[in-house]
Length: 338
Image (cartoon, rainbow, N blue to C red; front, top):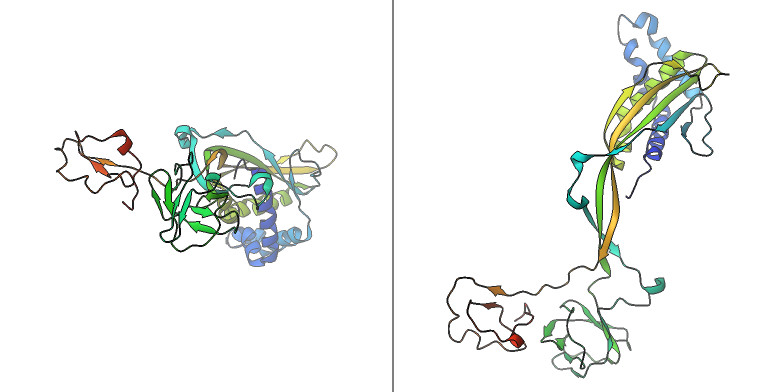
């Protein structure tokens, strides 16, 4: 989402609203029909006035222009959009601007899809037991940062085999019976999708929407009615759904516009304010693929005799009692399969 150019959201919303009103005459009639349905106003401002306003709107080109944007030169009549001051919302602030976590496919080096993402650099196993699927890693290469569910990939065949179990710090298992050449192979992660962390804040933004027509101030009121009605009718679909939320509308008086001294231009302004999310990337990081832990029971007796008889260096204990002696070489990673 990042930092949204909200003026463009409002511009596209107004353009869509004007097109929709022209395509649906019953909605356009409703914009002006308030006085026509009122018995006291109807004799002077009845359906003839409604038909006159509709005819003017349908036959008039009304562009929506943005302030300070090249190419958006106002031609009267028009609807203008101008920035007002904005500020960060303190009541929607959070500690460290805590925000969102998104999926982020990491790119391969140089953008190539042929260069794999690796957990372990290439190595050739010391041994591979086809009958059990056990692979023994060479000296200096360990199972650190590896996890069941990752893949052992043959650089020769290109085939990947799921790692079923880690055993100690230099052995792991794939499925039994595999026949392949594992020379200079590597370990790949479960996925190349990382977590992208975003932080966010919220801004209170405001825009001044000008309704400008020439010669007849009555047409300015008609245009104001159309724009105000449009904000009320279309803001849910075209603004709130696009992150301009909790909007509020205010209107100015009808005035002769002195910015156009050579023309008899009348203007009426609508100020719309709302809350807009602004967010930014904090960092990306690999997903957790494996967590190792042991359970230590506090304030308990010593473990019963024979507790650790079935444990070994390859399959260390998953729990301990206070006071139990645990050799430093025995205090290792714990596999769920043990």
